[in-house]
Image (cartoon, rainbow, N blue to C red; front, top):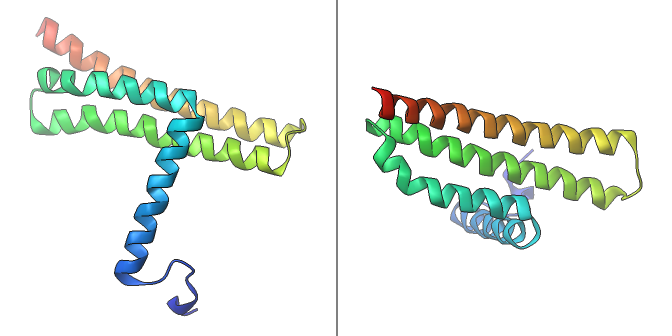
Length: 127
């Protein structure tokens, strides 16, 4: 199919529309999702600590990337929950499963950050 049928347009116009959609997504997550706000505050607190903790630019990038992964997974989890609730708020085994799997993904992203930051802190203190 040709790109002519893309609803967001082509070229630079599409980039601007996509950027605006991203802004709306961040705004909605911040307004509606307490977990996203909490993880954003955690990231803001840990960001300055990453400069002290990192032993190289690559190490710093790894620490910051783990924080971004948490936020990304939380956004995806929130999107799954919103879409599931849009379909129906009635209890359904598949809706519950989708929400639980999204929550599990957030937990795994937090574990990645905990392992990475914990190992980095251990090396900084005991090395």
